Image (tube, rainbow, N blue to C red; front, side, top):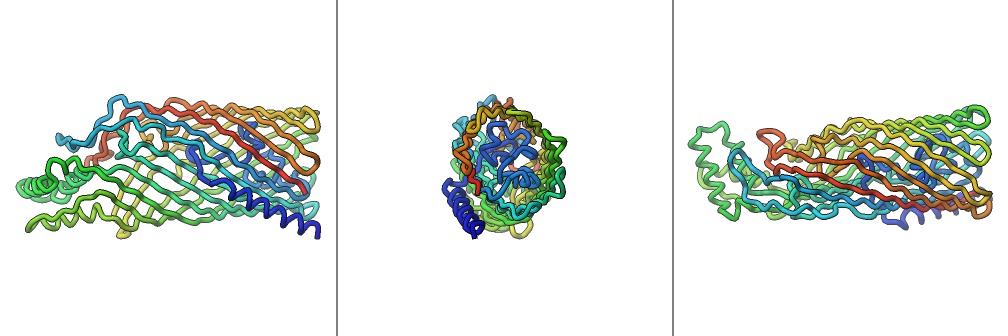
Length: 479
């Protein structure tokens, strides 16, 4: 009965901890969030697949649960402060051939980042000397950038928000004194909101030219002239916006192993699978014109109206898999941690959004590359109550310079971190951690058109600047 009572208390604490902080994810390397506990934050998350000593091991390596005695409840929140700015060095507005659309160039966009909390919660329980169970509630991927609606890159993107919510039940088994294994399944919900400016004059011109490309030059000139005449001088500069929303539910899995080497060393390996999301949702256009062309040109007007019509859309995105190898070494009061983690970001080569009839709404080449992350850290036990943590890591970005978009203006980064652990008796532990991330240069040179027939969106030339600070707090209870 005592175990059942402890379990009920644990679940109550998890639910409170999970929903007390508004789960609005933030930008990390790529848009994966390694910020899954505060106890690892002080080590820059170095060695977590071998060194996680509480229920958050469910995320980093489920086999490591076998190092957590009894019942353990962990709730934490990592507040991530991202500052993202853009400096224009020669951008230009949308154009098609010699035709320059008379839209304003716009401003530099302000700061597209903000402070946002990333909550997570974990429960684990030791059923026998050999078997552990656990469940995680966390946010493994997230992205949020919010540029000024009138900025110079608005036709490439303004608002971008991706949220994932993950439930991960897990089992771990201690096969013998040297080897443990673990695994689990993930049920994941993904929600996305993508906004951008729309130069309707540009779209109308290009759409008309494409629609009559196979017609004689006289018909082409007549159709383009009719559309431009209906738009008028002010209509050629007509702007509005588009917002794409969608969500999806999908399944994945994770596996891990932990080996004890001698009396002082542990080596761990952990794998999290890809998760393929088939998102469905809607596109909503605001400020779109309506065309009514005469006679034989009427179908062209109807085609333009269909292009600007709100309605259902769909896309597929395959979130990447990860493989982490880690080790810890302990002697007396000192623990040293290290890890190397690979992420398969090449699973996202582009973002292709289609309408319900299968026709393309938009295509953005991303060309993400696989990445790796390496970290080292150390913990020093000052006394029975206090432990000091430090760490550093190098984190590769999946973004290539020539395909960097304002939705994810990412670059390689270096972590520096420190933290404290405070034990309040036998049952409660409080961890605090802080990290500052130095982000490398991030140039932009996005073309006006990715192909000769694609919609003109302006030539975005400049440099992104970023700064990242992370502050985490965690409470761990032992039963």
